[in-house]
Image: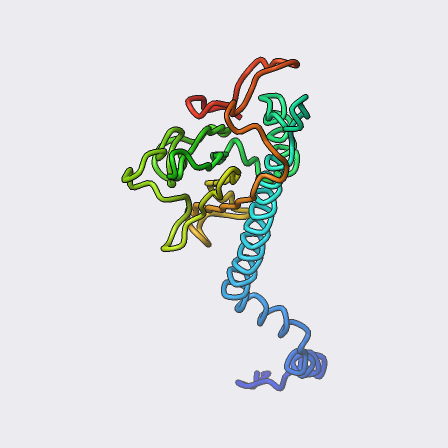
Length: 234
């Protein structure tokens, strides 16, 4: 007759395997990473999105200033020692804007308004405006006035811009005022920053002796489409 012990001693090999398992720390880092990933990953993605938002703001600001500066410079000389601004000049500068802000898809996701702020009868006056971009309505069309505003004393139009200090045109000259309204396009997801609308403005005094009375002329080469603010195109 054989007796079977109730608690047989573990085999030496099994004891050695258990000791090795107890001392093994190779999976600790992986476990800690798995536990912290739901917290660390959103923070990292939010930081990336915030960085992209700042870059978009910078690009938009630079594009707005470049557009106002270029429109204030372009023109063709006349026999009267003045410069005329042509529709073709405006279209070429707008095409440069499209290329400069290509990564933003600016004209597909926003609206750009170019205004010539001048003085008429001693009052501030928006002589002409040109626009580009498919977005329309409040928040996209100009917040600071439309073509023809002002020009008479007591009209209430005192200049362009927000706040108490507005941009005004000096005597016998013009100020090119550019307003850009743009829907921010998230890099990762709108979950992090939500829907953001960016606005940038810039203004430059016209450099040369521009012929202000005629405004924008459509001389040779004539354009196929004038960038009037009644159109909403890219």
